[in-house]
Image (tube, rainbow, N blue to C red; front, top):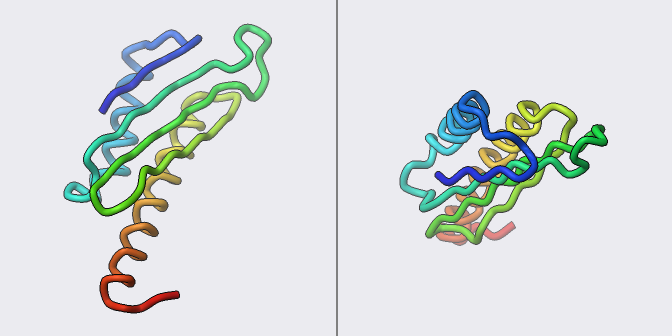
Length: 106
């Protein structure tokens, strides 16, 4: 899992937190996920505001790429929300794939 930061100091605490949250979210799908990349961004720089962004891109053989972007004033909250959304998005994509394989179109 690659983690990049732009405009944010990549501390060990931030790196460890992002890795832990994403590993937990992706851990339910060990066979379904080929790669995951995380980009942490400070959109407004020193101006402040709701400007911390966590973008997660996940790729797997059973689904098209999933890209989730979350923003919040608190980087840790943005990471949490992105991890939760990625988890739900993978579950939906895999469920749809199983339904299509069974001939159950919605």
